[in-house]
Length: 427
Image: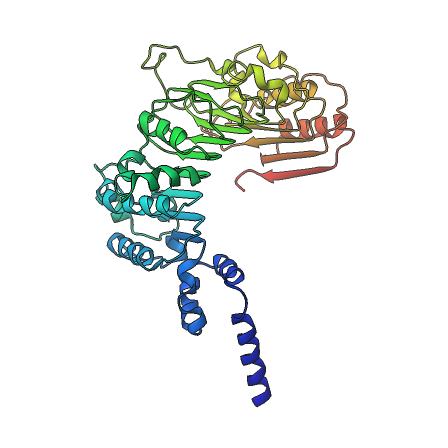
């Protein structure tokens, strides 16, 4: 027994003798509350957690039942104790509103001052309600209040030295905003002041109407914009852009100089929600049939990954006029279930004919918006065998004649077929 105890002590001493960099890396793999708990191990570990390179204040990773006041107090206390000089990631995950702006401004200022490279502000209620982490009454209390408005100019004034703010903004490489009000001017400030920014994600960020940046020094590689319902126009000069993902109302999109663009996701939910015919600038919105092919026409020949909505082809002859995709390797099509199934399958067939290098095809049959409507069959487009298709995924699969017929069609035409996955409807 004594020998076993000595071996445990020796092992503990050996671990504690590792360099700080290694121990901090180990701590960064733990949840924040677990990293803080290591302070009770020994003197060596007591303050080590205060220098971890990642601070993720996700409620589930701390204490799930914290109310708003306790959450804010906890974040402030951790930041007060933090002594690190190499903070890479800083994340806030809690449904905070405009009435918490003074605290959020200080937290973002802290992230700027410490040279954070990845900043995430997630103030959405959805995930918390779904997992019952916070009571729904908190959401009821928030009615009539507005989301936090991100203004880097205002936050920079919180810092003691404007020079620090100016230099540290250049450290941002990734910014993710969820349920954060973002105006046209704040959007422009993010792209112009954060000169090293490589990835920007906006989810459900209201008040952004005209997203514009035409500066020449943008290093942005990944731009993702989802469900920003106020957005009407986008004009961005992005010579380093690799991937662009958009899901929202149909808008005018102008990506300029994107010579490296290879991944595009462009989905408009305009068939579900109604929008005016013209924008606030008086510009007409693009027709659905031109939402992808029209606005990304100059980049179609260089795309390798594409995701779009089948409804773009509804009521048009465009389904027989799919442009040539000479480099396309992966295609993902979404089908809402309000149009004949044949539209989805014929769209896929047209893409197969126009994409000789296609390696993976995904069809996502989303739940029907009108359950009483039956998916109608239709004539399929004839096609020669495809030489490169090896992976096929059909999600939302239903055991009906139209689905089975298309499955046999794929098996017969994909001569290099390797893997197929059927995910039943509702899974």
